[in-house]
Image 1 (tube, rainbow, N blue to C red):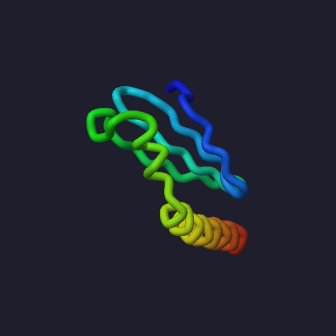
Image 2 (image 1 turned 135 degrees about the vertical axis):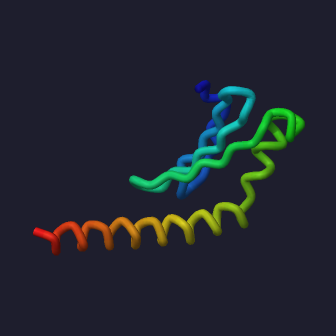
Length: 83
């Protein structure tokens, strides 16, 4: 997997990779990450991929990160209750 672009953002670490004829957009926040894959033939290059990373996408990603954290915390609580 080859890193092809870092997209600067104040809150997230956003990277675009190229692997196996796909672009992979990885959005990280703390210990959590989300990835989105799109075929190279479905876009007109890296600029198209970067333009897909909109504020709406990132706002929705934040909602998913909050849900991910809640699920993870619930898992820890359940693990500790089994002891």
